[in-house]
Image (cartoon, rainbow, N blue to C red; front, side, top):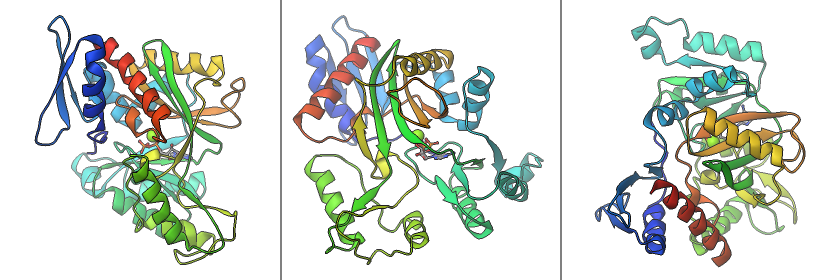
Length: 333
Ligand SMILES: Nc1ncnc2c1ncn2[C@@H]1O[C@H](COP(=O)(O)OP(=O)(O)O)[C@@H](O)[C@H]1O
Ligand SMILES: [Mg+2]
């Protein structure tokens, strides 16, 4: 099972800002991944990757399991994405469930292709695949079952993808996410444009690692009759993935100041209803999050949102990330 993973940056950021509130951070030196925060009055708190001592364990576990989280969110009246969970062959047999590979395929046909498949306990867009036919469905499921014994089969929902980060009763950050894409210059191949993109991430100390050999990329290109060696015309935007996670190279547009107050209320209420204090709410909105909510879906909730992954495009952005973590730190004390 995959856990929310983030860069060692969290430790670095916390270490840098802790003195502002008279706290200290002790990082485990070998991996720089886990740490202890010692607050002014001696209280100790811990973190591992981007999991902090802020959310209760039960609520965090539920939010790490998309199917369980959906059950409660749906019951609470939030618009979840239509979908069902199915089990790997071994697991279905072990627990004597009829939610088998075959049942998953029947359900996909009932929904109608294309469908979205994803690991139930995944994160960072890993394994999230839009599949168009039986062959793609089977190969995506086999891939997912290498890491997770539960898969979700969902209807694709269309719209703009947003991440809204809630801390206690406030939205501390909101941004739109746009799936990995390149813009042609009439000279470079798609592969070269991706390499340029990778270098620009490094230059801005964004730790995203693009996977050029991701099968999802070659399939998405093929559907557009393109290859890695194709040269897109100047100004042409080519999309390479269907998931908008920043971890897989998505772009972000900050909307923290512009998000509609009613969307803020929804994200804050959901966070509270799901027993969390810090939560990254993933939303698909048909339309714009700056407008009054009409049609939208809760894609998932994250109890350990990696704030530092947020595209770092300079000093101003870095300051924003530090301010976010300062608020988080204060909440932990
Ligand atoms: N049912 C769906 N319809 C359309 N896009 C989806 C759907 N499910 C996931 N996505 C896309 O994939 C991204 C990652 O999916 P998500 O469920 O949030 O998993 P993860 O935990 O890996 O982030 C979403 O932000 C969205 O861009
Ligand atoms: Mg997500």
